[in-house]
View 1: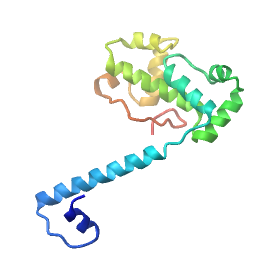
View 2: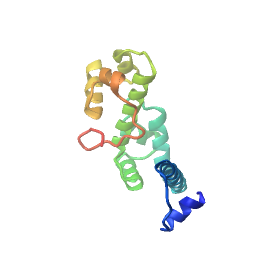
View 3: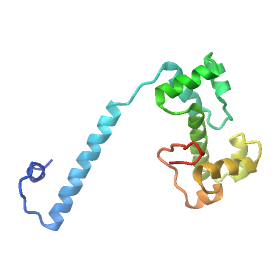
View 4: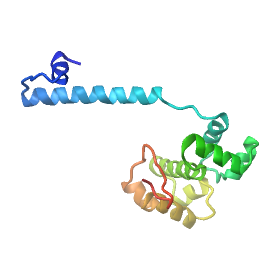
Length: 166
């Protein structure tokens, strides 16, 4: 940080023109953002190996109609044990994470491809276009076609109990 910014942070009166104050504001803001990013990266939690494996399976196969039973079978765990382990490690329900990844994959396909809604529904292994539209609308509060025109892919998506994003 510059000497003037450091002086201002220590509470000393420093005369700023409007232009200078905006420069110092953005310098300070940038420093705070950088500090927040580095602290969150250093605090990145590693999860139990089975939770990490489940998260990897979900991320890589979100377009498959994954169930907790399928994931737990592949990991050699009971459905209940995996669900409890996942909740204890992450604080979230496993079924919510699966739903979130499926929505994010659908968002990426809607924004990043020219595939029709029907093609995306098939690619995402929905039993019908209508089921895909219902699933998408419940989570994103808009239809897939409206999302394609107006929506933005969320950086992260936390799913509420009622299925909608926070």
